[in-house]
Length: 630
Image 1 (cartoon, rainbow, N blue to C red):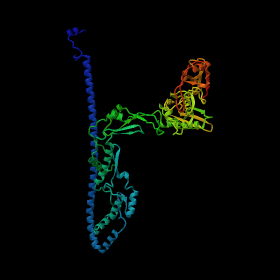
Image 2: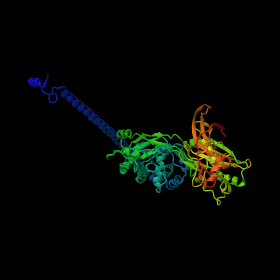
Image 3: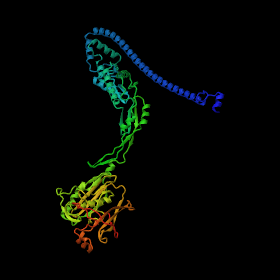
Image 4: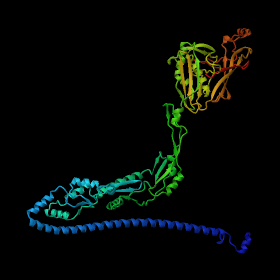
């Protein structure tokens, strides 16, 4: 029906029509809500009434027990008064007898009072102690459990697992066995002879039970014990409202900690009342009416959460830095647990422990365990000065450690080669010539290390080949260095630290460079090179050098071929006297005032200990030379 038709029939829209489905549903929901609220209120009322009823029953039971004790005490007092009255009559009779008997009675009384044992028919709470000395009485009382802790001790339990014990003897309510033995022996041994004879007669013709009598309460003793317990409670609940137990992976939170106090006077009164009875345990409960604010669990989560961290290696201290175990917890779940808990209830919030991937133990087992790359070269035939320089440079490098991502610089580690450091003059390449310079020979150390890094599959950052070929390594596997201009550097691109070992065997005349680390994949490499002739740009049929192109071949741990990668190119030039120039070049050079430089040109003097440079054109036949894994 459209709006006009509804207007004609007089029907109201659903929003205002009390008989519409929405209105009926709203009334049903309201009635259901009121019903639930009524049920909840009723349950709370019943719970409060049940708690009040239990409290009233406990109070009634306590009052009944106290009334029973008072009645018993009054009956005992009445019996004592009757006994005293009877004893007085007996005493009168005794006096008459004493008067009649005269000195004989006085003598007998003296003998009785001076006995070292208890009178006949004397009991202590049902335990017969007649005829026993004080020491024997104490022994018998001990055997009969006179001071049984289970009977004399009142164990008081407070919230937060705080408790303390009260001893009825120390509280002055019960005689100790020593006091009881003394009381038994003192019966009938007073200062009045007549009363002593009366006591003796009473004991002789009847029974005297000196039971455990309730004395005056030592309130100072009770209060001191209660104060100590309250202090322990306050120590547990003051300050931080939580503590972290990483062993059990639990965060302990006490609801209301730091905001609630125990009533010392109320606690003392409850303890004193319990001591007067025969109860052995008192569970003290107190209503806490203070409002308790929920802790900021979000801030607590941020404060206590720890990200896990793997163990690492400290290059400065040469020590393994232990791993960090992470932890966190669900802040929203913690809020729900807190809302459900009662005041002073301990809430146990489970922690999520986040283990690191690499522990210190793991790292210590991995560090420097594998030989990643190794190369040995010979310096047989070298001069003593050159051998000296090789030894100094190797010693400077030996033991160097690179953490993942760190870069090794030959010039930085070895330093400038100077006479002050002990370096001597030896053969070196300079300006296309072999000369004697301080530090000559150190390029053999950089070249041997370069080859070891290739086998170790480390990232080469900077490297240049020599101007001339070197005799101790295949073409393409050398690296020249020069202080201030040419450096050899590489980066530790592996996941673990590496260590460089450099050693010289001066008997065998061998230099060995080895790189230790952690081999995680077992991949090995071999190397080959392709050689091309270099020709002069003007006299194109004159060979002036060789170009070497390095190829690195990768193999998996099982010896299966994986791939081949092209390494760095190297260009090497002949010594001038070894180049076969045509006769016309000499005639042309002679005709010129100054000879024109040949292509490729020779670079400037690279300095002490090495040389470098490249140049020349590609061309010629290619030759392949395979180098073996050292």
